[in-house]
Image 1: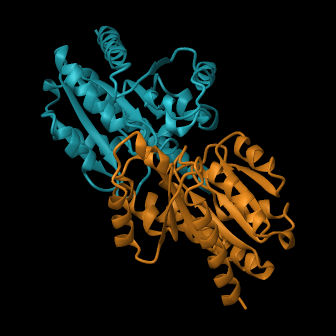
Image 2: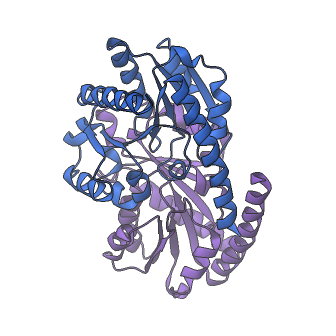
Image 3: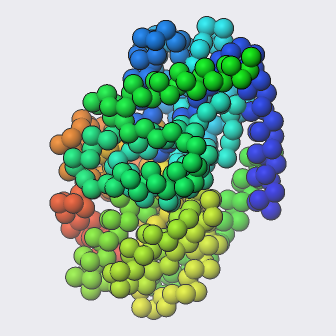
Length: 222
Length: 222
């Protein structure tokens, strides 16, 4: 019974995700999905990203998914940008419908890049499109260098992979080339960025990637 | 449509979990569920636990859940104990039926403690009983000190919480008392252990906890 029901849910979700993306295209908002385990550093990366985008005159906004609490949204809101919290009440991923509802609180004309930070989970959000143009997976040194091999679907569907907390390499063994090689084998077109929100390593590369990907997408949409 | 379907799946799973636990009780096998995010250190903790249990003449066995690959089971098998891999093919949690099938490969009469290591995921395994007697959640310093607050159901349903990689406190700020206080507020009966598989801190306390919990359970079952 399980599989067909799950497929129906996904089909309906995909339809709503397309509607979301149509809206984003009309309003010329570039949308970036952010996925990763609890503690991978998604919210901290977004905080660094917000400051850096303001410096290049791009106006960010953030939708934050969580099981409970609005902690992450409160952190983001301190940066004075549009932000909303999607609390799933225990569900393990965001769905397109939740994103669609939350958008009604945003003035999309004032937003250049919208980030959708998913619930902390390296598995379940993978199958659910939200309407995002690109998807970034954040994973971190303390999680171990076998994560690409163990969670292949998540990494295969990523456009960009942020290997975060690269400064933790001083504390543990981690073969950076191994997950990178495995990720490129799954998806040769992806962009891989080593990053540390503590030292700032990789942030400029990440901002340049976002700018380029956004411009490319806006040109495609005419 | 979603919610009632999910409930039906859980009900059928709970029934099979009870059957598993009846079997464990008949065979006097004490069963410990292990939950945690990818990279929390579940498999490394199990490796340390296996060695320590042998020293106190308890015979361990391990069932390992993963999306793909048998990496973790291979690591465990090197310790020369009964071990099986449950590959979920992308599903985000183990279910009781998978455990039941895997048990057919085990001679339960030769096992004192069976560990079931769930798929790396702090959310989805929470709702699915497998027949375990106690449940341990492993979370680690790099994940951040707000994890109890953000994933309350997982911590509320734990009997024991291992705060792992306590040696990483040298590298980052983390208020140990905060998640501990929040966890006890959710569940006053839980056991909290600070642990480092690198330095060995907390392993003796964990082994003593397992011994005591096992003896209590065996006495209850007569």
